Length: 591
Ligand code: DGT
Ligand code: MG
Image (cartoon, helix red, strand yellow):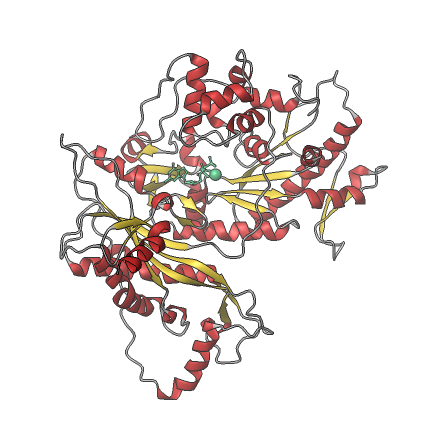
């Protein structure tokens, strides 16, 4: 029953073309015609297509890139704010264009949309006698909103690229084909809207599930789309399109099969460990082991995969799950749009010691200010009510959620091993406290609020985490706003407490009594970041660059989720965050 339903789904996957470079180009259109590379640490994380034409590649060392294309414009992209903001804007645009509320992001530049309901509705509107003059309705409440299209033909490239003349589609596959014809036109429309309204081109895949939609997009890059068409049945038939499509892929390229799983499968098929290609960044495999190689390996199936993949980190039924993926089956739903992020965090990494207390405090202020700015971007919305007070921009905005907890995490740099070599990266330690209410005050600048946040909350938290008086050897500091309390109930009708309004009212009452200080000089936060350019070995640099460039999860970096440690204020031991409450009870009992 469930599988039958999932066969009907129409999923569209977006991958924005050379995303970071496009963000920079959109800020400065003159860069569109020149080779442009975006640098993080010592790596080109992406480059535009003009640069790619001249031999630049993603994840190339900057030194190499300068040799290959000395004329390339290299822009520093370590501050992710502009990319995050653009990503959020594009995501909002896409999710508002569809009906299902199912729009899921992956990183900053990929989005899946579940368009099944729109396709269902528009199939119902078709005049089967005149498919070439169809109209795709984008708004059920207003039948004039939408676009004209030719439903007798798929738009853009397809897989297979042309139908096999001998294949006769079953009635069910004919129906499916029509659904994907409509999906292909909807994808074209959304791509074009994204380009004309937002200035971003994208590469799109249209298929019946998330796995296939993502892989389909890779077939024709950039600025293009690919639709996977029937025949899709019968299951297990090698002529099935999906099987043929997947069979050529390297096993490691299948979403859901991570690096370690792929290595285990490769080792089983090859009968030995698969060799790696040497490289400073992602070490790809030298040896291609395709989905076909695995599927057709004697005795291969869910049970055998269970045996191969057993071990730490594997879950019950992993073999069946991976076997499904190898057969193009993926029942995973496209996640629903979330109104607010689960948490917001800002972090920076440091190459050098933070020697003095003033340096630490400055970093906490910088990160605090960035955090407050992000909270404004992600957690404020226009207040229709207007509040009726003043005409200042900030006064017309209100909080849609309040983070209740402020968390400070640091990552002490590991000591060198006995042989003098670098030890593996150490874990983060963190400390949480209630978020002070004053950060929700919209009448103060983020910089002013951040000074207070640093003085009154972050510095005391830092002191509790680190007892040394000076020369802190930290590789990272992260400040986070967590434990979101949504204020969905705080509508005009609601009786809930709206901290933003409370400050506004207070501001109105106090305005005649306020003494205004001369505006404070706001530092350029970027220049305050400790000097990263100090001479260091390439090895050290790469170790930093691979581990410290934030992983983009949610709208934030959060690579320390796995094992947060907090310091017990009584015995000073580092305790896993989840166990801290129980640990405190232990102290209570022993008193
Ligand atoms: P594309 O999709 O091939 O046209 O090019 P991009 O630049 O959109 O590349 P994509 O989709 O793989 O990644 C999206 C952005 O994420 C990209 O603009 C830069 C960043 N990014 C990708 N891979 C890495 C990585 O390994 N490390 C870091 N720090 N950033 C990365
Ligand atoms: Mg991309």
